[in-house]
Length: 307
Ligand code: NDP
Image 1 (cartoon, rainbow, N blue to C red):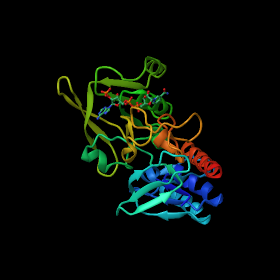
Image 2: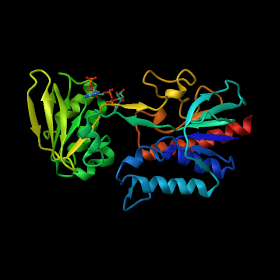
Image 3: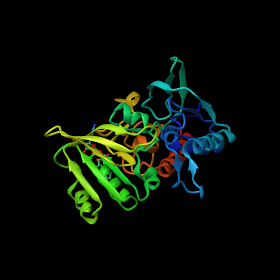
Image 4: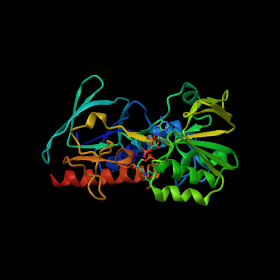
């Protein structure tokens, strides 16, 4: 086998399109969530080439069909374990959910990242019905409405300011009495008089039958409960890269994101490349993931020519 791609988001499928067109006969293992994070979004309006927008699952299906058109084999299966060779030209071993061994000269890791959620049953039930973990993806649907965002890091502030340009009012719920975000990011808040920050506040319950119509929140100092009338709840409490099976095998940063060499997709293991959110905690967009997927296939192709 020349190229195995692990993960089927925009990075994985774009890598597959390029690898298949280069005749590398790639096999893509979709993982547990075929299509990745975009299958949990509704409308995607910011992917170039879709002037009328496209819903996430449709876009991922089209990417899959495009990859298959050039001979990509798509396996609805997940890789549970890997054993990477440290030698240039070495054979990498992967194991699927049944423990079957798969060997390949190159591997593209595009297992993505998962947004963290609070874990409240009411929040989980309303994902896609007003609960979102991506302001850039979904903020537009709450134009001129009141929304809330949970989190006190750089992402929360960045997304709050993004939402403030679209929505009427944005309430930030920060569980501590201070932000985790940098001072520079905090300073941005002073440019917006429609962002209100509630420190020491946590979400108790997301209200609404099929769509969000409010929040029950708690002041964690005096335990007072109150209600907030909003139609959109955004979570910005961090992401976790899906890298558990690669721990100790591929170089990662402290948060578990795979480290790639300069502007390439090369990991510290020869023949193993990483693309998409699994190696990117800053941009995290479908289009940037697709871009690095393309790069990974080109890097794999060049590597195969060298060995
Ligand atoms: P962070 O981990 O930095 O911040 C997460 C925030 O969410 C913290 O305020 C944390 O609170 C809060 N939080 C976590 N869990 C819960 C919970 N269960 N309930 C309520 N609040 C919770 O994640 P970010 O996504 O903000 O940032 C990730 C990385 O990306 C950082 O290194 C950041 O600097 C970087 N980044 C940089 C940007 C830029 O420079 N333009 C933009 C965006 C991200 P607590 O503090 O209490 O733990």
